[in-house]
Figure 1 (cartoon, rainbow, N blue to C red):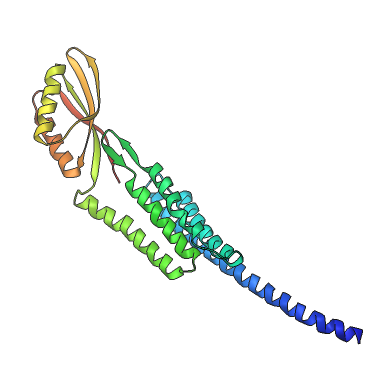
Figure 2 (tube, rainbow, N blue to C red):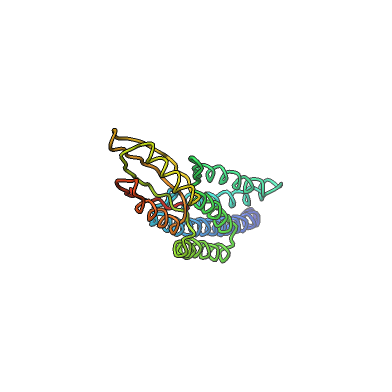
Length: 244
């Protein structure tokens, strides 16, 4: 009789433990799947950035996507145990990513770089949130669109000279005043301006090094005008930087 009573008491407990174990296993499996998908999608986007030698590459994008997914999962799971606004944790992802994105934007003497990198980090976080919320199809589709935009649209911008290019020039001349005056005349005619100006040399042989930000076609036209000028002893380009 005692054995029968013990059995009747333990049986419901055993069912509860088995049920909880099954639920925990399901939750754990779902969590791992979401985190793995987030890491993979973030890594794919990061790899594209890494191959193009951008500041935020493979690890940065993977970590941001993974972290956004983790915070989204935590937000949902903590809300189950502690009723309340389950969006509070996830909502903090946006200002956090904004802070990181702001750090990737550089402003120097009228030239702004890193905007595409900052925007990429922002949308990568949204992919992580989608994966963390179990919206796998949405996350994969968004990743595809991001890759198309980064690769295809970048080529279109270069093809039609829509991207701004910073090109460094070195101009030599016998007279510094005459050289500077001729540079100002040409640049004003082209509605461009010199940046990062450095002057070196001695009387009879001065070097003026500067950079100009404009499109590729405008750079070609400016270089042609500089080379055609009879005031300069020589004109050389020292390298170009393509802005995002």
